[in-house]
Image 1 (cartoon, one colour):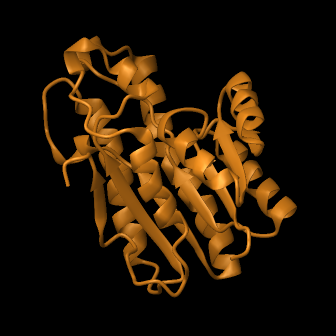
Image 2: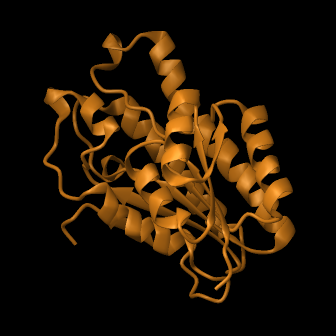
Image 3: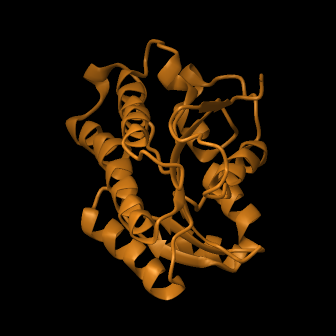
Length: 231
């Protein structure tokens, strides 16, 4: 099997880094992150490419994907793992914090998936996997903004998947449960859930989806895979 080209958005830590590590030995991988030092550390560790990119900036997202295609000639798969936590009563969240969460969790996947589809439609194939959260399926106090913004991404994927009308460009979603990642650390004790799965376990399923071929069965959007360690 030929080496393929993958982008892992939010790939400097947690699930994204675990997925990039599984891919990097055999494929061309570019890690997206918004902190230059974290991107440098991750790319040095894995020996892959890196792109400093704020996903809330369309121009930065567009330029990062264009650079991959110009360098590697194709874009086989994109994992969108970028996410920002927002917990607590909505009255306690500062307006600037609210705006930033919407920028990362709503504008981010919109721009990332838009540009991924742009290149995949031009080449005629490709896989996009949006990483959501089990929070979208379970309402609970204290996470209204986080849940709402992550639900946006799930809805976006479902609608876009219906619009593809073919199996060569697949848009899928994976909803992990609590994992010991940096985001989980930021949740705080009042929201700390029991951890059911390790990032490496969920990353294996994420990588499997990324590597589906155009001839594989139609799974786009129709099948929401929940990886919380209790299946």
